[in-house]
Image (tube, rainbow, N blue to C red):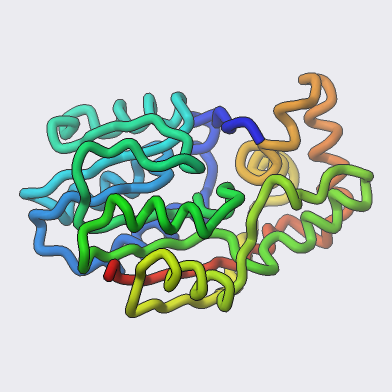
Length: 248
């Protein structure tokens, strides 16, 4: 699948559950304030902003594949870019960092990467021994109702778009990539939105972006509406995969 180019401003304008996932994930890092931390799939910089507050003498390496996301991050962090290295990269490939980092954090990104075994190897390759890796993403069972609705309208249910991994396989892949002190769990975390315009905008911008980019503009709203009609309510049935591990 080609890299998604996100609508960063529309993304930031939504009532995103990511705004709670990010701080909760960053809070799991044990930091002294002097580290270099990689924000993997940094998006518009909300989590990088949280990290900079915890790193008064450190820096953030912000990596994403979307130019719009990185431009919005640069606007958000304009007064602190001296402590931010911004890197545009395809996260499916080895990470193009000049030096290793002390920790890696990732929020709502891993499920867009098809090969987690390779991804974890790439993360380990840029992480110092003893460095922390904390992440959260869609996990096994994520958006099951939405995927069923896609199937009901004859659309791709997302097997080639998302990678919603389970606990056992994630633990095995992390161990093979060189991690220890591994903690992995699946946590149901449904997000309720306002019915109508807000819910449809959320689906269009966040959940169904990969489906819509191949459609003519005139067909996108009807597509989203058809999915909504087959859902029981304005709820995104999220199940989150939470990871904590330490590089051997």
